[in-house]
Image (cartoon, rainbow, N blue to C red; front, side):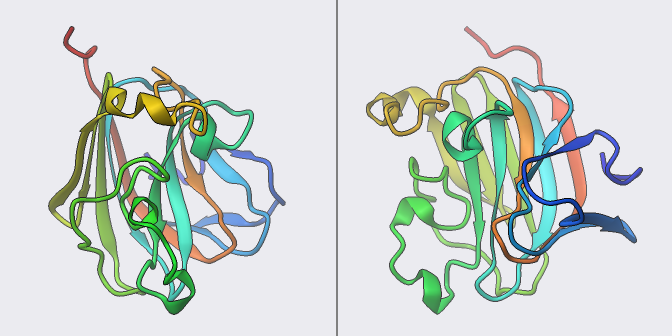
Length: 187
């Protein structure tokens, strides 16, 4: 998906120049970078990517997000974070690395140290979502279990939308982004 740089992506909000592509790595840094969204919308898919965050780094992968509003809530955010950094010591479990932000905590914490490349795979098929971090499945859920969170997360059951990468004020690098669409979910 990234073999030709930023082709296939559009920047939503934020200042120009906060996203760049060099030597096979997509990087965001600086404040107010908004987010990158795919041009197309996706429903059922497998997304695999590698990422690297610095100490205290914060980012995320948005799924099924519209271009308007905060995609962490109008769609969903899979958290990317150096959650072992002191500045994040007050987090709740559903804010840890790999969580469906504000909704589902990971079953275990398997993130590597800040500065190391990590691999994340996100599988979204109908209301089922899985997150595999560094080879370990840490989320395996059905979103309809969280109907009580729809007021705060109105995009939780959104059937399709853009896939996005978040700039949250810290440098974050992404590489080897691969996306495969899946057939419709089983009834």
